[in-house]
Image 1: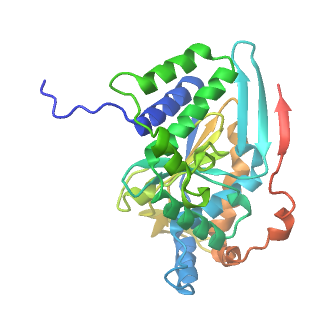
Image 2 (image 1 turned 30 degrees about the vertical axis):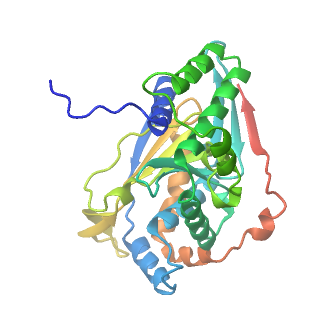
Length: 327
């Protein structure tokens, strides 16, 4: 067979490959396809943006991040981490108050990087909009290779601390030797790069795992006519979402008088993946019920433009876990 191109893994591909392999090797996945009717919700979203100037307009992605955060508050165990020892069959579930969203993002150079959107559970739509805008600004000044190397190096050190010596040594070897070695800053170059203020570039805090993964696959191709059926959960997180593209489909609509008709409606496919060691299907029902409530009465989204929860969260910026369960 004739090879048209050969490309060895760079650090971004290495990290994605490592995380996804760990996911499928260790996590018992369950996925559910949730397909709500968002016709009225989408119309209300359009009305909301009509009130805003071009710089302040809210993307549908940002609106869905807010919506999913509302759902997670109704089903808080979905916003958890798991620690599990397969050998001794012991484990722990840490449920968090903060909702830190790990969101795969296409950056200015075309590469994909997962960004940690911190404390989105307490932010208004405007604050979410500004936060994402600032991430994109800092990404333009970031050497992505160097940023991801910092994450990889930190993971290797943690592996050593956890006693995984062979794994850590093999990662170090792969990073520094052979066709897939990583070229990163050293000496003067490293000092110059690190002299850039952290407010002006992405740091390890922006790239470390959050509490839940939300991937907006719909934004990559708006005219898609399918849906994500399965996606990986990145340990130690226990839940992941893939939000698709809004699509028109024939739908049974029940009117106030009980009459049913078939109409063309806007449907939004959302794949929900969860770790069966922590969650059963019943645990995600409150999440879907909350989203159903929002989609059926979408006028509520106008209130999300006002930051109403600031006082309640002002004293808890460095929050502890709200629940810890051992088994």
